[in-house]
Amino acid sequence: SQTLNNLADTTSGFFVSQQDLLTSQNDDLQTSIDRMNSRLDDVELGYVRQYSAMEAALATMQAQGNYFQQQMDSLNKSK
Image 1: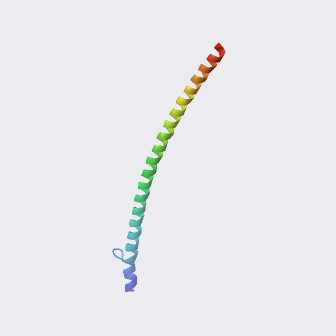
Image 2: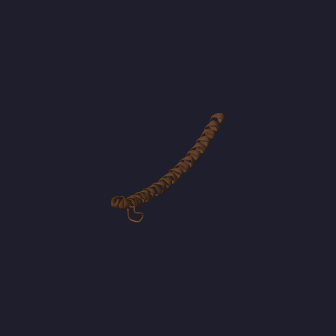
Image 3: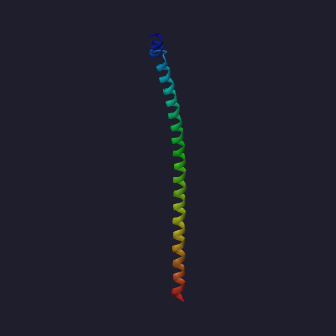
């Protein structure tokens, strides 16, 4: 009976200490998850910026290509 009382004691019993331990572990895991999510957000933002810069560079190259093609077509027509 005393053993059961020690296990079930609502202030310092085994179950309470196990619950506290699990709650603490859960909090630690949630903190780790939050940190990882923050890092992932930073990485995603970097990729978005890189992708946007790549698209801008490609658009510039396409415009230059079109300009050069028009110049070549003009030269060919004038011959």
